[in-house]
Structures are given as structure tokens and as C-alpha cells.
Length: 285
Ligand code: ATR
Image 1 (cartoon, protein in one colour):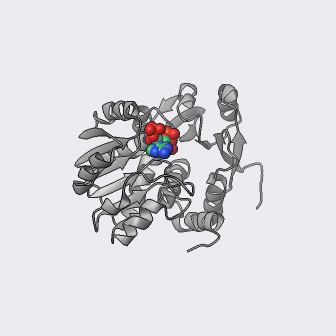
Image 2: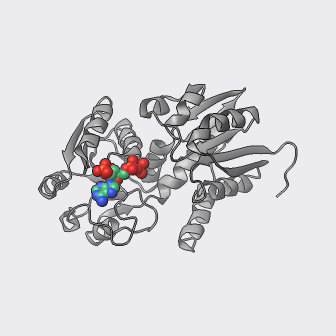
Image 3: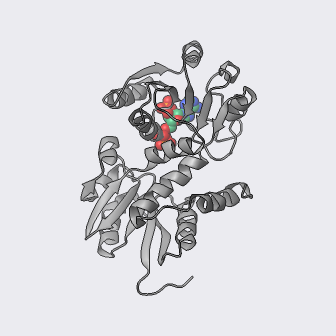
């Protein structure tokens, strides 16, 4: 790799940031398109966020991603926000343009593109979503924006579900429910698509969200977890003949949308996916 005085610098800020897969994925994308650009991780402590963002601006860093715990707090240090970022109150991508920093949120768009890639259209669909955290906010918003008929949100902490329901209710038909076996059983019967946005299934020995034997046959089941590639939820759904989609597509496509915002070029999706699969699963298929 040749770095010159003209090389553009991109990066990611987070705390911690060591686990981030974005440097690998974005560097592979730049290389694939022979762009003169690098992408590096920046570990930024919460109390140093302000200095870090003004430093990135002063250094003319062309763009950067934001990860935990800065996605919300970064907003006060930016000049403009996209409509999605404004609504969600969270930014995962920043572009520098003529000395101004513009904040975007590509998580929701990335999620929808990952479904489209698998031939799943959301328009007119009845969706059952588990979770009410940051990921649920972006995913739920994107589902409504893409024309979901309605969104049933189930969460363990009902207060959190309530807050999310109030926000997303501005964008479409949203009902909220507590995470109770008999409630879920009823909701499952009318779902075309089930989406898990909780962290349940990430670790071996995690509890089950609900009784997976109740998943209706042949529907679409999406888990935004990408490691492991097949959570117990997806395994059970597959055994029921459901279409299953894991979170790798969302990870790739949120990065692809960011890449396109920065470069104006179509992202090399298959290359990005390949390097991630090799890194995560030790294989590229
Ligand atoms: P993220 O930004 O990834 O969405 P988060 O905001 O911490 O992370 O949200 C985590 C989600 O996983 C929440 O919906 C959380 O439910 P609570 O709001 O009830 O905490 C959900 N979650 C985590 N562990 C869970 C478990 N054991 N059972 C059910 N839900 C769980």
C-alpha cells in the first residue's frame, strides 16, 4: 500500500474500538476500488469526545464512523444531520464537506438492504421485533420507512418498549408488548417477519427469548447477530423451513452505505463480505 501526501484519511471512533471490524472492511473496499485512502481506528474516551471530533475536523479527516458509546453524544459536536440521524438521535457515520461535519445513520438502511439482498421486501409486511435498545430503534424506524404494515415490539423492560413505541409511533403503526410467553405466542401467529435486535443468542448458554418451537412455518426470521452466524433462534427457524437471515448483511451494508456517502462510489459488497467472513468464521463462503 502506497501512502502519499494526497492519501485521504478515514477512521472510526469508539471506546473500546479494538473489536471493530470496520477498519478491515473499509480498507478492503478502498483497496478493491484502488482508492488513495486509509481507514484507521481511534480509541476515544467519552470525556475526550469533544476534543477528538474537533481534532478530526482540524486534521481534515474526510469521514469517520462512530461506535459505542459515542453515537448519541457526538451529535452536539456536528454541524448538520441527515433526516434519519436527526430522527434517531444517533449517528454512526460522519462526512467532512468543506470544513463542516455532517452526521448520518446508515444502520437502518443497511438493515433494509441486507433483507433486499436476500429477496425480502418489507412493504405491507407484519413485523414482530424483539428488543427496544439502540439497534431496535434504527431497525424499527427503517422497517416503518420501508412500508411495513405494522410493527409489534416486544421487550423485557417494558418502560423501554414504551419509550421506543412513542418515538416510532410517529412513523407508523407500532404496538408494544412485554416479553411474556403467552403474549409472544399470539403475536407469532400474525407475523410475516420476525426480527431479533436483542443480544440474546450471542453467547453460548444464553436463555431463549421465547419458545422457538412456536415459530410459524415458512415465515422470514432475521437476527441482527452475526457471530455466531447461526443463533439458536435462526437454527430453530431453519428447521421450520423459514427463510433465515443473520446480521452479517446488516454489518456489511451499513458500512457500504457509509462508503457510498464518503466516496460517491458503489461499495464492493462481495469483497467486504468476504474479508469479514474470513475474519469472523475463518472461511469466505
Ligand atoms: P443495542 O445498542 O445493541 O441495541 P442495547 O441498547 O443495550 O444494545 O439493547 C439491548 C437489547 O437486548 C434490549 O432490548 C435488552 O432488553 P432490556 O431493554 O429489557 O434490557 C435486550 N436484552 C439483553 N439481554 C436480554 C435477555 N437476557 N432477555 C431479553 N432481552 C434482553
